Length: 216
Image 1 (cartoon, rainbow, N blue to C red):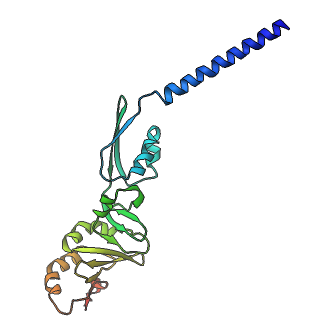
Image 2 (image 1 turned 120 degrees about the vertical axis):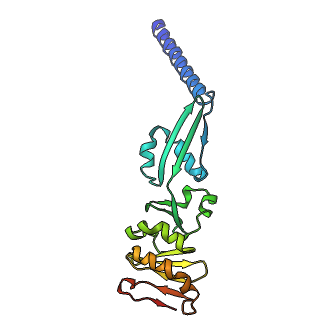
Image 3 (image 1 turned 90 degrees about the vertical axis):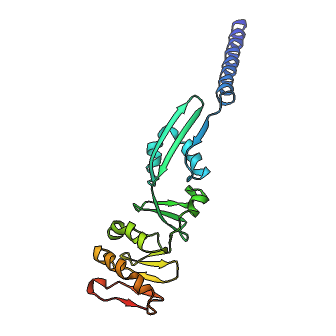
């Protein structure tokens, strides 16, 4: 009986010691450890998305596979501070209806991933029912088209061509194929066309390759 009581007391003491030890570890590592300070060097990402990034620091490469608008990133850790530098791709337009940003490589990102200031800084508005797809012809001519027109809105029509809505309210209906000839024609004739009373509502270039142009 004495021996059994001795063993019981011994195991109780060991159990108490183990409980105390593990409680100490929890206190030390979760309450007494120095907090980690995260420094983000970008002006685009929302605070919620930044929080998601900090929660996935150990596996960022896999995490960013789901967010293809990230161009590249760099993480440096010094003691209790972590510097995170993230570069996103070049934005093309924003779709208000779908709450999405469309980037020049056709990558799409939800508004929820970005700060309001960044979203507001994107002037071009995509008014397509589904977020715009930048086809091969537009992609090749993107810079020249942007230089030619003061575009406020763009719409992808029937999955093949675009309408451009200019800041003065007129519409330019582009053909499916946007090539050098079309751009040269517009560049040489647009000033004349926009001063013509026949071109007040739209310029229809859908049949440009058949040498048919309509204006109203």
